[in-house]
Amino acid sequence: MRVLIVQLFPSQKLSFSFLKKKETNFSCFINTQVELQRCPHKKTHLFSSLSPPLCLEFGAEGSEKKREQETTQKRKREMGVVVIFDFDRTIIENDSDNWVTTQLGASYLFDLLRPSLPWNSLMDRVMTELHSQGKSIDDIANSLKKIYLDPHIVSAIKSAHSLGCDLRVVSDANEFFIETVLKHYGILSCFTDIITNPSFVDKEGKLRILPFHISNMSPHGCALCPPNMCKGKIIENIMKSVNAEERKNFIYLGDGKGDYCPSLKLTNEDYVMPRDKYPLSNLISDNPDRIKAKVYRWSNGEELERTLSELINKLLNRDQANNNLQNLSGECKLEAIPASSEEGYSVAIPVPR
Image 1: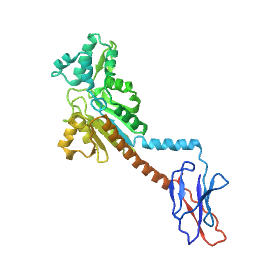
Image 2: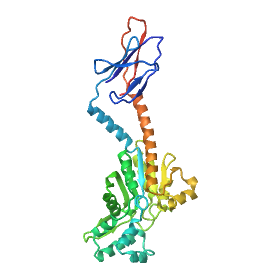
Image 3: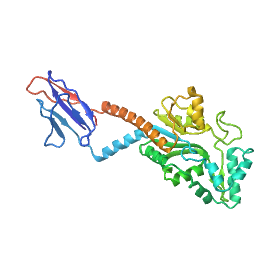
Image 4: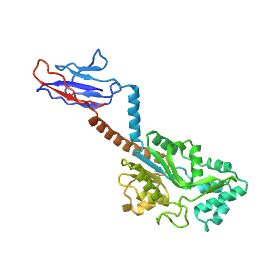
């Protein structure tokens, strides 16, 4: 417990502001210049130029309590900003499905079956054919590890994670492809969730790929999205989940037509980052009145990193300022000391923890 005891007289008018300081967690300033001296007692400071002196008493704060406070602050930051990434042509430069089929020599079959099969069924069929040709799951994984991922994007993801943001992937690729690439670049653990088309390796060693929505008809009722996945529905579910206790800010990054529907779900407190000159950016430009979120475009990894960093820091600094105000007003204790021989009155100034 810390108590600031101040004795004032009618002629004295003092104003205080509090700032963090390494030794005491805050500094106390008066609107008239006075000297702050260290008393022999370790927990006391005196303003010696005033009569009677102002005495500041600080209770000891152990390292355990400091760690608890830091953890609490981090938890407050965590989930405060939710960053959602598309995968193909957003995190990675390529389309992962096209990359694998090209790398493993299945482009002809892919092009042949493309007009007659839904995308997920097509990819599942291609994986079956590759298995019949002797291609193993390791061959598929090794081809994925050759996909280029801009170092700026790796840095942006690691930085956002270190700041306590909730990072997620929402993609129409598939689980095996995404997790293999993210793990290879050392950023899989940065994401709290990957929402995509499920995949698994069956007992014969074939990679099987299934649609996110298992139905030949569009079960989500959305005309903007493919039958297997409505990202807009997914974003709505995420928003309901993370906003249950406190409103969070969302930043959505994408490039394709499938990223337009989720962009429409964002509010005016959120941000959408479309890749410039790609379908999502064009759709936003063609229908500007439909987008409530603030729009920040990017063209390459360097621009993505810079823009995302600026937005996250803007939001976190605002949240930190709000938390400081709440802590300043909420954590205090009042106490007074008896009047001295001079006639006056005592007031207690609240001190934040």
